[in-house]
Length: 474
Image 1 (cartoon, one colour):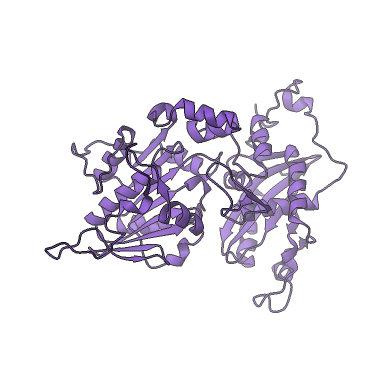
Image 2: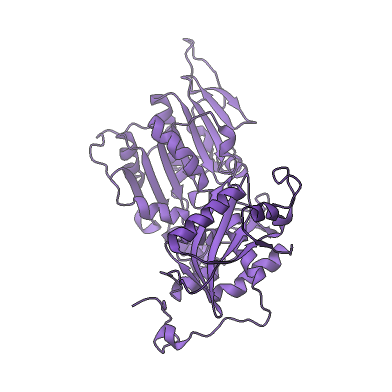
């Protein structure tokens, strides 16, 4: 984090808003020309409000398109476009988030001299879009529809609730901002060890980034008495640590495999897991064309599964997958065993010219085993059964581990509140689905109803079954 050279006078937006003391370092950084910020701030610390206010200033300095992105388009409408927040002044009533944009309620209103009263010239409620008098445009978007705005080329993007958003959004937008010299602000409250945690680890020591973690102990913006009330009302200690002290140890709320992944971490089963040339490598895949193609590389050693690699690509073809397998084979001297595909590997498409997709793999010299279609929740249960027998290579499977940790129940946003989520009886389809579904493909093929989590063997723990360690460690 580098705030050297920040101006002594902070330029604030119109509308009577003022930076809280703990928000000023971010403002100094952006006001001084900073282009990247990662804010791991606690709940109700004013993350969205601060980022919105900065955008109003930035949009007047440089004409262009600006985005405020939530995980989904529906959340963007609920939280930002229609959102209401408490005022910093206890004597003032709550206000709309859009009040950050002076004049949005009466666009194109003129004063006595004919000049614009506010910043906004036109409001499009259907598109969640504000057109400003100076020519800038501001959009409210979701990480589930960012590609629908192809051609707008944003020069400033706020990634709100980044820990729950599709990480592919940044992969798509990053080269645009790099090309046009634009800025990006990532804001979130932790949701376990996922892509947001990875981003913070990667950038926290870079001078080009402002990276900051703020808990309630740092900001003092929420009293401990209010947090204790939540505790007495039923909030778990893990939830409070996550929300107000930015703990990444608790699993994502609503996740299917969160507890199992935490157990794997504590047991030391997420570590260095080298490829064993004496064992065949199986692949567990999920197919995707417009979405993602995901594959796990697994070696079975007795009752254990050694997960040694993970690959995922958007819009990949079967030929791309086959080329990747050959590259891996040559790189690591792999000898392949079973290639497991989900049930849709037996589907026929126009691209396959009336043949099952598995036949296309066969034409490329790869024999795949298409698994029968089963209930998704049954498959999730079977993944839970085999996870205690899995060892993961922490480097090569890093992205795949994020998918398993992030896979969660689908939340019914119409019935949920900020404090009480309501879940549907089905998984959420998002960026984590393909990786998690690929793992489920393998779990279904290896299901043994007689299997149970094994006891630790002495050779893995030095005779102490309470402190398992990696069998590959020195």
